[in-house]
Length: 620
View 1: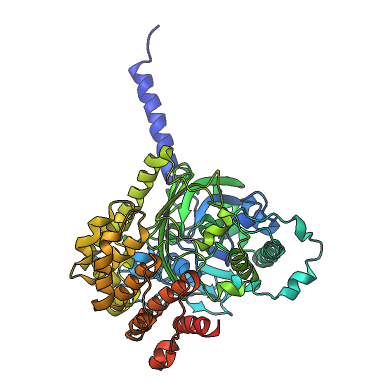
View 2 (view 1 turned 90 degrees about the vertical axis):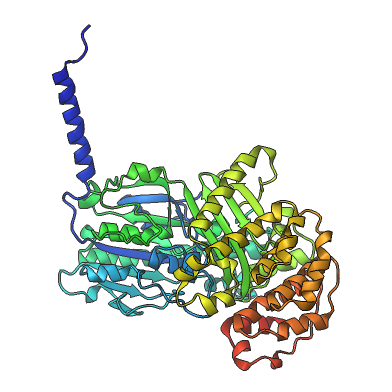
């Protein structure tokens, strides 16, 4: 039997090339130069509460209505589990730790470099009307070119006739504050809901307070969905649905205890649906009602909007479009990595990073002795938080439930497909070590590439980086890498920390002490040096870190010494950092201090974040 002729092979190749060209150009044919684009955001709800994404979630018929005409993204992630940091990521398309936008809430707003704009500015320049109703909550100074209007009265309707628009509409009804109810509401119950049958998460205590709180929040999600429906009806009545691409997503996870403010999946994994009008679906390679399992993050959202609008994505953006012109949906399906970051949430400091790859989640805690359950005033207005803390103090919790109030491991590894609430740590499992190393390397490479500014204390960054964060990161990239390398001794021989404890660089010393508290190997050889730091170090943060180290290791420190450290603070962020340690030592290590807050300048103790610590320490 003869093979195909040269002519027929050439013809087959011709057909293949034509097919390929057609596929490559499909997103530019029959697609408007500037479609309308809408973002509908609901506050503080992870994907876990919606049946569209998780078994046990509630029905959301209006969001499901959007999904029937577009794409469900099963693995969408906020890069941060709190409003201001998540929204700072969304508005720039850049990882917040490289721009010093990762502390919630800002003590001082940060200036964006001249080379980086909030992305609606690019849309306005291209002729779009941009409107935001109404929440911003950015950690950066906002330029005048971002929004045509950003207010409670902002609307897409105010554009000129025929002008394309980008419109953001925020729904507050699902926000954390909705759960700041009193005990009477629990006694009243919920009409039509048998609270006793509500299933709690395995890491939560199975109490009436937790069951009611979950049921009540599910009700808030359904109320939010009804409000989404009203907005969609308004769009339909106005006749804009046929030429408007609509994103619905949660602005980060939450809001039951241990979600918002924490790098667990309940704090990061958000619902995302993108509605695409019928006339655009072929061009965008979208099948109505389909599901895409590829990983997308908030850093990708701005790049995706710009791509849909036909605007070149700026080189400074960390994100990549996941929908739009020349975007292959099948390639998006192969994306499987997402990063997360958590630093300060209101008055509570911590430093945690995460990476999700496929089914695995790696969490790196740089200060794991700062337990998750450390007091955070706004959080603890929720009765379920208070219930959790009381159950812990009463000894009523099992190990999974008590983990929230205990020191973490520096490294944790979970299979979140098998263990969605991250209760089974695989980091010590001999069969998981290659996976652990892969995740560790992914995270380190990502931090190197940024670089991650948070290895400097916040008050140092306020003084030196707030006006030029990119320049500061470039100029100090070697130090940042070294600090991270010091922190990585936590899983090795801690005696190697001695040269760093004796370094002239104060933040070498800081990370060496911090890592000594973090590690699990014998550290007695370091105790004498750390005691010297307590007595004589010029940096209050280092002296407090030494006091914390000694106290945790059952070597009492005189109250007067700790008070002297506190009273030496000169800046609000510095004092806030010191008070974070005081709360840890008081609530978890039995230290009681007679702090005289009258010795501080009034501006320091009246700072929004510092005042929360002052209120807690003086009222309880």
